[in-house]
Every structure is written in structure tokens, then in C-alpha cells.
Length: 478
Image 1: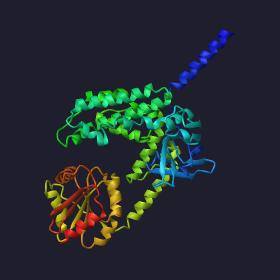
Image 2 (image 1 turned 45 degrees about the vertical axis):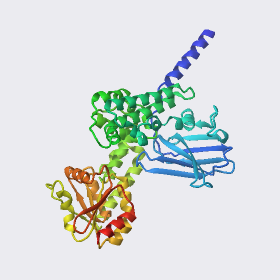
Image 3 (image 1 turned 60 degrees about the vertical axis):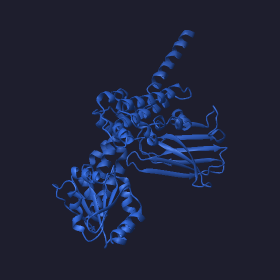
Image 4 (image 1 turned 90 degrees about the vertical axis):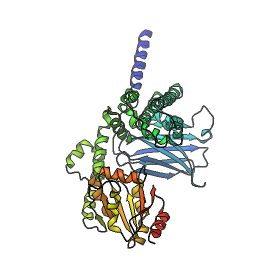
């Protein structure tokens, strides 16, 4: 009997181990809200809790905030349609700018996650964990809350990224790859050696590091060129990309759990295009990928015609997709009656300095602000809204010209410009490259101020501010 009991126990442990080794589970889809509640003790300097996440469908930031009760309790909910990464902000509004403590967690439709926190242990050098978690994803979320800030992938590579990129000066492709791999190996070794971490969290942290490793490898030539002052060519071969192909993090469910969230799908496409590879994705992301494609088409001003496919391919996102589709139809109708913008055709044979001359020659007699932009460029669109008061002030005295190229889908561009008053040019890829090189521009938005004689006076890469634009245009009138 004892032997039988021992065998049953061993089998049970084996089954548990097998299930455990499968790693993080598939995405959960649903329309029920995620509920996160908890109680804070010994945390007198927190008066509200805010949950922030990026919608898996729209890519828009969503924030839900609730006050903390006198006894330290709080409860909030989120309308998420699939498992995703979120951040909890614990705010003290009495301090300047509302001091925040930030923690990460995974939320999923219909979940009921309960948190308790001992404020005495927050930030303390203690082996005790400040957070205790019960409910869905309890073990994994406990590690997310307690350890995620220690194992952010960005920190593994900070010595060569951002402000650390200058350390790559004088380095070549082989040296870059050696440094990158060494930093990755050091980070992963630290993850695996930490006995406090659950296997699920280790899988998550390693996969996030692998994704960022792939992104940086794909951007290696640009990073090296930037670090070396724009001098030299840095060509990567299949041999350099082999290390990432062996990782293939996108086949893991953990790729969809992290801070990159649904953007992991975009990274898979971006890295795959750079490396000439196609990466396996988890089967569970099929509905999410379909829903995102529908929304991408709508954002590109393509009306979804076959609505029956939406319900079969993306049932948990159907109401959101149909609402966005209806809004697009309304916008298309409204655009038919809008005025204040003009599409101007440019001779495609123009090259060199003749490209800019061909654009500005019709405006001689008044200053011109030429805005190089793209439909996908968030800073470009934000600056356009900021500059509206200047346009209204100087509309009769200056010309406002907008130039874009093939990176902006023509259908998206044609639907965007009715709300952007001025003259619009859609140039060829060669003309676009010529214009940016003419002003040593490495990105957009780029602005060029042209005087009333058609001569370029000043240019700016990035929005210089309303006051600068006003001053430059006013000065060009003289």
C-alpha cells in the first residue's frame, strides 16, 4: 500500500511538472471586464490607484483611476478583450506632479485579481516580498509586481542603447554583434540564477530580452552609423542574424505577455523582413492578428465590406471593429464637403534641386512653410494641430505646403488631408529622398522656411515650436 501511495504521489508530481513546464498559457479572449482589487497597508502616501494599458486592438493608451479608501482598499476594472500587459500606478497627489510608484501585472478578460501590499517593504532591502497576489495568474503576477522592474530588457542593453550608443563609436559589425550577444547572455544568466523567480516569470523575462535583442540586431547598421557620425556602411549578413533565428521568441506565448504586447506581432514582421525570415507565432494570437489587421485597414481608410468575416475571424473584437468601420464611413461622407485643402501634382521627372524649386515656384511673392511628413508619423500630426493658430494668423500672407512620399499609403493620405488646410504634394520615392538629403534630414517632421523669392532660409528637423515658426515666417516677409 505504501509503495502504491508513493507511486501515485510520484505520478501526480510528474503530471504537475509536465503541465508546469508548458510555460505561460495561451491568450484568453472575452468581453467580460478584468477586475483588479486590493488593499494597501502602511502606505499613507497613496491616495489613488491608476491602471494603464495599451489596447491590443487600437494601440491607444487607456487609463482607469480610482481613489484609495480610508482603510487602504481599492477596486477598478478594465475592458480588455485579450490577455495583456498593464501597469499599476500608485499616486500621491499631494506631492508635486503626483509622485507615482509603478508596478506591472498581466490582466485578462473576466479575471479577478486581488492584491495586498505591505508598504513597509516597498523599496526596502528585504527578502520579503511586499506584494501578495491571489486569483488569476497569481504566481506569475506576484513575480511581475515584485521583480519586473529588476529584469526589464531595456536595462540589459542600456550600455549601447539610447545615451549609451556613443560607446559604439569605432566599432564594426562583428564587434557590435559580440557586444550585443554578451549583454544578452549576461542578462539571461542573471534571470536564470535568481531562485526567487518562478519558471513562468523566467520564461517571460527571457523572451522579452530576446525580442529586444532581435530589434537591436535589426537596427544594428543604423545604430553603428549614428554612433560613428553618419560615416561608413555597416552591412550585416545571414551569419550575424543566425543567433536570433535560433532563439525565435515569437513562437512562445510569453511574446504576447510583455510590455511590447501585441506589438510583438509587428516586431516579428519587422525583424523577419530585415533578416529575410518568417517566424512561427502562437496559434492563440490568430484572432488578435485578424482583429488588428481589420483595424489597420480601417486606419488606412479602407472600409470593411465583408462584415460576415469579422464575426467569424475576430468575434471578441467585432463590436469595436464595426463601430470603427461605421465611423470611417461617416468620415468619408463628411470629407466630400470639406474645403481649404488642395492636391497639387508635381512633375515626376524633376530631380535634384529642381524638386524643391518645382514645389515652391508657384508661391513666389509670399513666404512658404514646407512641412515634410507622413501619415504614420504621430509627431507630425501632433505638430500640425499645434501650428493651427499660426496658420490662421498668417493664412493670407504665407503659403502652407505639405509634402509626403510613398511610405504614406496613397489612400490613407488622400483621406487624411481634408482636415489639413494647405497645398499637398505626393512625391516619388526618389524625390522624397532628394528633398530630405538636401536638408540633411534624418527623419520627420522636417520644416523648411522659404522666402518670398523662393529661396530656402532655414530648416528644422523636428518641430521647433510655434514661436519659432511664426518668427521665421514673419521675418521671411521682409
